[in-house]
Picture 1 (cartoon, rainbow, N blue to C red):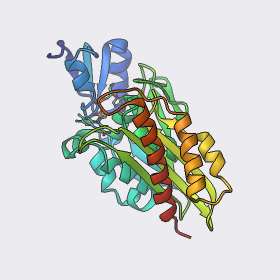
Picture 2 (cartoon, rainbow, N blue to C red; picture 1 turned 135 degrees about the horizontal axis):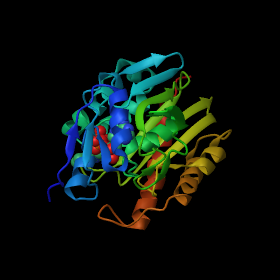
Picture 3 (cartoon, helix red, strand yellow; picture 1 turned 90 degrees about the vertical axis):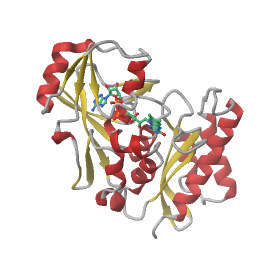
Length: 288
Ligand SMILES: Cc1cc2nc3c(=O)[nH]c(=O)nc-3n(C[C@H](O)[C@H](O)[C@H](O)COP(=O)(O)OP(=O)(O)OC[C@H]3O[C@@H](n4cnc5c(N)ncnc54)[C@H](O)[C@@H]3O)c2cc1C
């Protein structure tokens, strides 16, 4: 199918984009990399009368270290995340996750902000953002609000973004020095979405877990935070028994649906396996 006719707008500032969004409201859609929106338009799941292209707004791109926080413009593409010296030094979890997204074509156009705003539980950044404790700057014509990732993802293709808001910036607290990290993603082939994936950040006190964050991709209608598994591991030695127990607690919160990527039983088993692998790898990367 081809999309319905639409009017194309190419503002060069956030204020101009917000004015257009204010004027056209529910009739408008923001265009970032287009890798999720255009397929939706071709299938007529989305049929905006106005398309507001954010690609000419330079202020929405860039990665900066600001005190103890990393600030990333929403229009920063996956490839720029992968090659960022700031992220490679201070937030390798995000680099590892971005490397596992699709193929080079998608990574050169697809943006961090678009991946988050789309609200697809199959996308990788929601779980990574949840794991990192990120927050999102949402602007409308009246001002801005800062919303934590924990609570932003409301359901499949549903987020806390209001129709008159633009996600302008992603803020990530810099993980403490020595923190171990891992994004473990199972996919059927290069370029595919996750069958199951787990993101982990971990701090160790010797061989005892001091703190841990565990989140999951494509195992429910949003990215999931495995709070029981985290709570269980804090203060415990990480060994085969505790890894299995934590994996079981992570599996218990998953509600995958059967599709071409596998049955419910298979996906649950893979949720456990990705959790175990991510925990093991992250712990091995801790710098004491
Ligand atoms: C073949 C293929 C494989 C893929 N595999 C993966 C994968 O493995 N993992 C993964 O995470 N993703 C994957 N994707 C999705 C890809 O990462 C998309 O780029 C991403 O989902 C959307 O980002 P975008 O910049 O293309 O946004 P767009 O498609 O332009 O927009 C997506 C939605 O977000 C809204 N939006 C965009 N930017 C903003 C903003 N700043 N503020 C408010 N709303 C905004 C748009 O209006 C639209 O509703 C894949 C895509 C393809 C085509």
